[in-house]
Image (cartoon, rainbow, N blue to C red; front, top):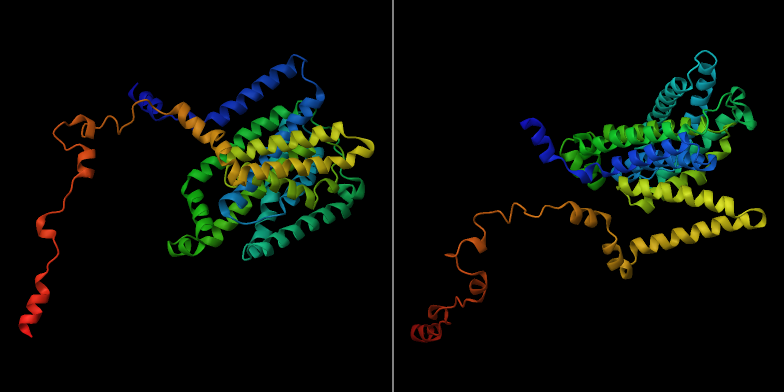
Length: 383
């Protein structure tokens, strides 16, 4: 019993509130789907929100915690989508379980994307800033053109999914989201995560402390590519055909916007921003049709500008502080009696001590501190 009491005492709700919220959304959505209340469009939107969260959180490992700019995340997703869907079509003919086929395809697509991330990262991570962004952007275009010109992938018509998983795919997607968060957040809190953030803060100091900078850069890039490949398989399981035109440079920018709006280095922020931007895109696409479809990008850009101004403008600081989730959670979960107040040596518990106000207002200057005027006389007498 003492062991469980120790665990309960050290348990911090604020570290698990994200998992609780996602599990509650998953449970409620699954119940609504089983009851036949949820619309198919809502199920499709939840699936898109799910793999968008995976993409944003995984890219945040490179951009937020490693401090490198990557514009090729959609390329890793493209590789996972094509290769995972191709394996899924092969397995579904022999294995009747769609879930088992999808799990194997996700693992395969993630591993292939990780290998591509390692292949690109070896030469590319020697670069920094804009040069790295250009190289990853070129990789994104190369992957798209390769998938376009490979005949077994359907060429320009795209790769057809023989048996799409169905609208209930969002349940699997949210389970994968929770598993992704568990892996990445534990990685960030581990010694490997601290090494990655040390490289971001000061690469020279990290080298001086014995951190293998090249290894950890490649490690972060590979992990991010792995989860991007899994997100691509989840995308390919829901649509047919899988087309290379959906994994363009603009989609990489959209994933990067999710990371920036949510806060660079903030996992919770990436989750909120990914859900918000995905919902915004789908809503604008459905509401604006015909000639008004061009206004989608204008409205989208205006909303993003307003969000950036709110996050960075000095005049909005007081409103940001009021809406700061971290401060609100600290107020909600803080203890009434802290260790400092329980200190037996506190100033308000020992009456024999000098009151702090008297100590600060005391005049410690004595007569001996008066300026010495005998020096000129001594000098004159010597003269």
